[in-house]
Image (tube, rainbow, N blue to C red; front, side):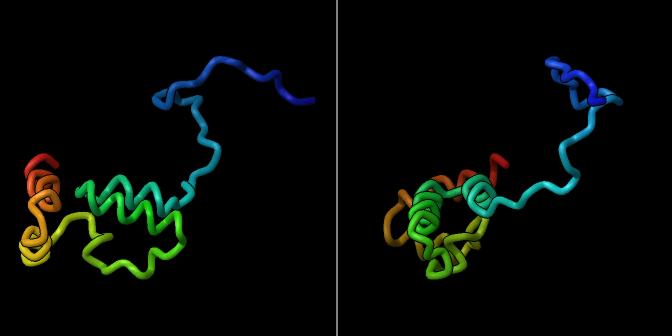
Length: 92
């Protein structure tokens, strides 16, 4: 016979807490969209994921933070692209 379902949530700090599984599912979209600091680069990633052509993006677009030469190069296009990336390295 099964146990009655307890409608109260058990806090994760409790010794009674048991996760559904111990191996979290890897979600590429969530990983990229939360770790990439630049808003413009996140938008490019989101569009590419929706189209299914993420492999066509250059590596610096999907990097969590831009290296100095990449940041300078993309900043020459428009300062909007470096704003979050430059500030992000001081915030996080």
